[in-house]
Structures are given as structure tokens and as C-alpha cells.
Image 1 (cartoon, helix red, strand yellow):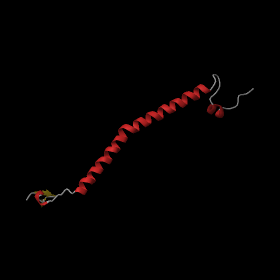
Image 2 (cartoon, rainbow, N blue to C red; image 1 turned 135 degrees about the vertical axis):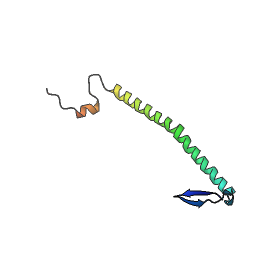
Image 3 (cartoon, rainbow, N blue to C red; image 1 turned 180 degrees about the vertical axis):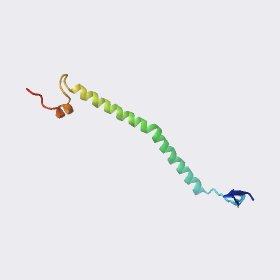
Image 4 (cartoon, rainbow, N blue to C red; image 1 turned 90 degrees about the horizontal axis):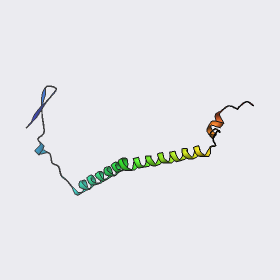
Length: 89
């Protein structure tokens, strides 16, 4: 039997051959489902999320471009006009 020293005292370790591990069909199915869900989560995080963020960025750029084109040269943008003080006559 193997021993280890813990806080200066020898402690006996349980032999590995005493432990009994069994694989049942239910445990095998559970492990398969766990691996499948982990794989799906990794796919979403590594493939889908960056594509969605690229789509959001492209949409924001299009909105900014359209807002910039809709204002006439020499005029303030709608948000800037609402916050600027009145011009004296």
C-alpha cells in the first residue's frame, strides 16, 4: 500500500485497484450529450458571434453614412442643431 506524508504524518493511500469504475450505457449517453453541447457552445462562440458582430458593425456604418449624406453641406446635424445655442441676428 502506498503512503504519502501530510503535515509530517504518513497517510495511507487507497490502492487504485480497489476502486471500481464502470461505464453504463446511461453514463456513456450522458457524456456524449455533454460533449455535444460543449461543441455547440464552442461553435457559437468561435463562428457565429464574430459574424454577428461584423453584421452589427456594417449596419452601424451604413446608418452613419446615410445620416451623413442626408444633411446638407453647411448645416448642422440634427443632434448638433438641437444642442447648439441660438445664433444672434
